[in-house]
Amino acid sequence: MKTPLFPLRTVLYPGGPLPLRIFESRYLDMISRSMKRDEPFGVLLIRDGSEIGRAKTYSIGTLAKIIDWYQGSDGVLGVTAIGTTRFRCTSEWRQADDLLMGDIELLIEPPACVLPEEHGPLADILERVIDDLDRLYAGLDKHYNDAGWVSYRLAEILPISPDEKQVLLETDDPIKRLESMQHAIQFVRSNQPLPT
Image (cartoon, rainbow, N blue to C red):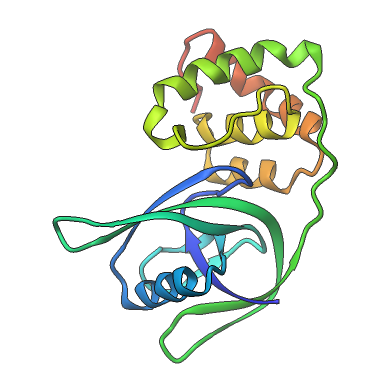
């Protein structure tokens, strides 16, 4: 499936919000086409390079669907998208307008898994934190008993590096995702800053 790609310095997870400010013409055109055709675009974490210009990316990312937009007073287009499905980019190329395009294959999510009882306190912490981030998460459905949903939301908000967030995106099993975040979660729960 041929899809426009948006390299960013952030990891998007399925079900997660993505606020963007768009000013480059290649991305303005991409967003316009995406809205007119109701088609997603792919978000990939930058491995090397920058958001402006060219960048090397990881091959696994998440499709994004635009759910809202506004024109800022500074003339910059503001967009809110939501992550839908993880994908693997198998090849990529640049169009004449310098927009990165890719052939992608969708990754199959494991079936929904009820949050195990031992991870229940994590859902409680997440609920309190999301309440503080109300504007960004206000319109999104919340599923505190779904291990996949809880693990993705924790991965979004935990103060860990983008590379660590990418590893969590590439982890298929939501229980393993929760277990691999346990160290960072313990620091957050104890109100201590994460070691650098």
